[in-house]
Length: 494
Image (cartoon, rainbow, N blue to C red; front, side):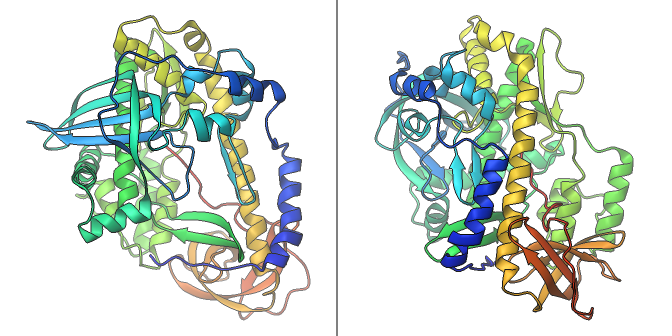
């Protein structure tokens, strides 16, 4: 799908919008920098170097352009029965002393926050973008997952162990995708789509499905702020399958050892499935009874004006994602239903708190060693820490986008703009404007999901992040709606 962009002048961006975003961070007590004791601890922290040396394996990283907090590096090679996938994960646990200043601050934060005017890291950049990051050409310690995959993409064995590694190259998604499309990628990178597609097929066979929701990002550049809405490149989906492979392997390890923390989510009940079928049929995309859910989503045309409505309905189908710790008795419901497998977060320790526990637990299991007492004894604390962090990230992220959207529409009050109806609920509808790329609510007034409509910008207040739209034929407004424009925009993660 073509990227839609709308620019806000630098004068406005650095004025009213900048003030609104700064006030938002202050109101939510978003930290600016790290406490002195955490900074000092990060500067002095050293990890132990294991005997296992895998620096001869040509790992590469693959991330968005400009990334420096590189959690993951991968290597794929063919084997007699299929493939060997190696996935190296940054040794953040080696730098963080349990109970120390870094540990305490990370528990407060829970995850890295990505905001339009700031990036608030989970750990000091000296570690997350420096000595712990898998930067190219640098000797690093990593937790290396090694998983054997057969010719059909099914995984049969897996282990994780600390090792010395060295990334050979820092790849980014657009450039790597262009190389693959042009046939210019090296032999190892060419295996990524092969393995990725096989793993997607395995996911479909399990009954799972990765929901390819379009990303909605606020980007800041010399021309101002802009909202970019785009679907993931194929290479991003293939790379995500490597992360899922490591997480599924970790989940199985934990269940076999009867200790760990899973990312769980219940399957939708019959009523939810029936409601979903009704919604997508009304949008002109009926779900055939003989077609698997994942395959149905895969066949959707991303260029169809009704596809956003289908994806929105799919996003609400799976609810109740949580972290489930256990020690002794595995959970009755161990699955992450959208993945259709047991699954644990173990691939982003630089940016997500819980992964530090998953890595040290799985490494101990594989080595036949006792699980570190700090990790085992604090398992029950993690769900509340991560729930709080996820809620905070979701709320401030949505509020920030609201303010950028209001700023993009501030000087267009009174204009009639084209939009697609994404969802209708009672007397309100949610629409996506073509330009600027704004999602907002409007009086339903006969609107139907999946149809194209014209709406008038009635009001936009940057300070509060509120937008009011109305059907184009409605009279000019005299009051401002106080409903945030993107309050119901879907944002989710596995």
